[in-house]
Image 1 (cartoon, rainbow, N blue to C red):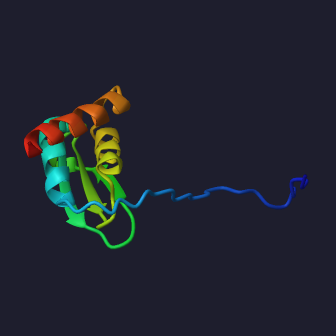
Image 2 (image 1 turned 90 degrees about the vertical axis):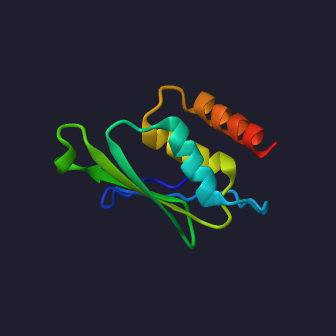
Length: 113
């Protein structure tokens, strides 16, 4: 086992673990339907097709008053429904993210039928 180096501290380690879903579906449309169901309060959300990884950026929207915010969500062509739903549920601040993910996936399955 390596001893810790007292001269170096790891401050911000970024890990990227991402499942690649080969299924063909409209990921942007799925994200928009999910946002319509989640209805993030006092938040403006823009969704765009990303190239490499699912990316979520957010900040405060001072024009919308206290608590107003914005978010930009990049969705790559290999993102799974689960990954998209999880990211959007966290963004919306739902209390039970796993339940919200399952609800979004079930609702989308019914919409496709």
